Image (tube, rainbow, N blue to C red):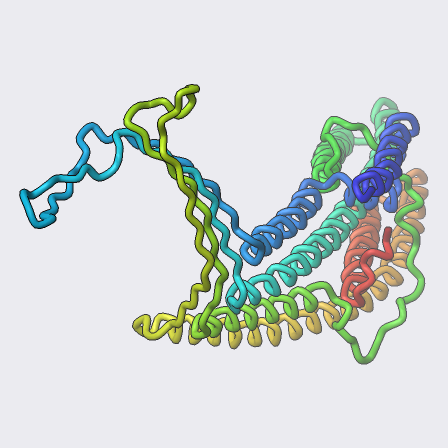
Length: 446
């Protein structure tokens, strides 16, 4: 029944994967939410972390088996070419007695059940904690994939905007080239002006080619992080990179109780203590119930299966308790316990460092958000101003009131302002993702 329920839960996931696959192929559009959900379902790292969960569950079953009855069956067949004899003196001449027969066979079963073994019982506790650990690691892997895919996604969008900027600039410069070419033919422009504008166009086209190749590489990186085949064609909507006008709400006192990293450290700390407890349990005695039954038969020939069987058979059984009391093992257990104490102390230091690192990431994200928003506001105004200067200089150039150097300088300034604005948008989005992650809400992007 549980298997059927699990299969029923998998069916919607498969249908969603097929639906997304059809959507990507048909519409050629991939939103951030779709990309993140696709990554959570198809990322190789996420899938491997799910397999680790299964492996942890099987490890628990392995340790649990040590606490269950251990039953072993045995069977044996022995041929004795020469039978030993026993010499006895019954008051007369010594006599020899043959011990056994040429053919001996036996079959038996043995049972062992742990009644008290603190090491095994502690191992079961550790195994259950290990399952919790693997679940948390899988959750952390999903969060890391979400962060990675989101960062890659916004990188593609920003580079595409920069490509649009270059396309616009190339279009504008080519329009200037036509004007200069006409002026040159009319004797109103110099040959050096024609050459300079051609050099400028060539440089812009080279930048465009480099940016286009960079976008392809970023798209491939995005698809790789998503677990999507690299040859799949995708298109990211422009509306995903919206304009930023205000900062998100900050928290004065940040709690890391819901951070997966801290939960993993808590589980690791529990495992270290259980490991120490397992070492201490080696000082405890262990008690086991044992039992066996064996049936043996002997015959002068191999006629165990014949109708005129002459074999003599007999059974034997025993039931007992086995108590093992550790006395001295050369301080081996004491050394293990002290090593476990060192691991526990190191885990405390790791936790202190991780907490400080998470605080640093949160504070840095707030600083980056403030800086990026300030840069976005300034560069937005700067782009408008640079565009006005460029158009004014272009008009003056057309009327002979400005030279080509001024026009090209204003065009370069406009390009730099636009690229700075796009880069500020990317920095803001990456910092925003880090802030969401610091609050433990990275899955809200799904």
